Image 1 (cartoon, rainbow, N blue to C red):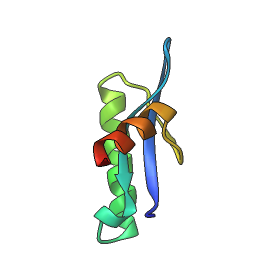
Image 2 (cartoon, one colour):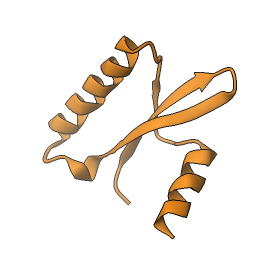
Image 3 (cartoon, rainbow, N blue to C red):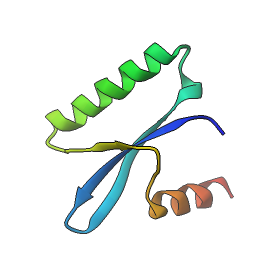
Image 4 (spheres, rainbow, N blue to C red):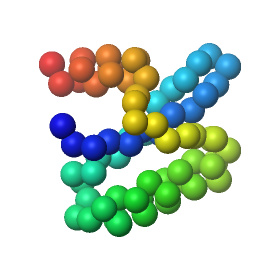
Amino acid sequence: MSKRIFFNLRTNQGVETVDWLSRNDFNSLAEYKQEIKRLRNEYHIAGMQVYLSNKATKDWYLQHLHMTN
């Protein structure tokens, strides 16, 4: 499995995974890191104080498992 980074958001209802990136989708580590930073900044500009995580929420995994079956 490729390295992934998840963008999680803590709300009154709990934690939600709002986005994710895979290292395999980029030609270099520098491009990957640059996109992580760009995307996090975009979420912050939009008022969404996402944080980076190595893990997604349980709901995210359940949703993506359902999509692949």
